[in-house]
Image (tube, rainbow, N blue to C red):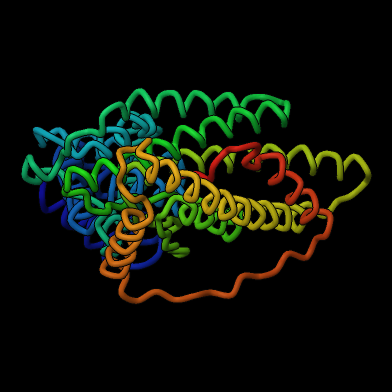
Length: 389
């Protein structure tokens, strides 16, 4: 049994081209008795991915991008079976496992196709590079897997998610603005309260990190939007364009805010872009690619400016409250400065070598104008503070 698998691996995994995949798949298709061992070998490849810093969502996202949805399902099946060996998993892992796609049945649509797809998946897993870890791997010591939750955090996040979901669903820009504003206010208060609580209790709260997918098309504009949201939340984002994700470094409450707000603003921006594009095409226009790219670039840059303005405003308001004792009497600005420094130091330790890249400018005036208007509709209205302060 092992010799058949070894022969198939030698043909498919360590040589280039489709001919090796076909040869290996032919060997495995004729050896159904090797199926159990083949899955076990696949679990080993998945385990190596954890050791190299990858998380379940990272693996599935890359497999879906570089192969197809069927291969993503195969990867999900291997991940689900591999993690059964652990008594405990980090919290972020649990949520990612819940969102894995369904695994297709073994041997479908036929044994050769199934074996060929598995070998292509194994070839990709074998070539995964080591990346910066953003949390403990499964099987780590118990104390490394969990930390005490912030008081009231689950209830607060539930309310924020509900508000943003309504903002994404409504067809009325004014209602979306009001709902997003309210969500931002809750996030801002939560982040400030945690910062001051940690300062008063001398809690050992160090920055963490998470990875957020930045998918094609128009990934540059999407990365700019994520960077704007991260900066407004006292986080730093480092984009890996080759692997299709950004790593966001910050404190736990701020990372939650980045994930929630970035996802919501991207949904709102995409919906607004689709509506604007439909109007353009109704007028006889055909150049949709440049319109979309310019729209999203303007949307990201305009939102970044507005978030930065909101950040300055809410920081001043919160400092005034702290001086008056409304938030415990702790001076806010030194607390935030210390947290900013901790985030910067952590980012520099994780990514000692980063490079800047030149962003291609927008070339479509209509797309830029519509994108700016959409960002204004998603703005922080009234007294709403910038997120994460």
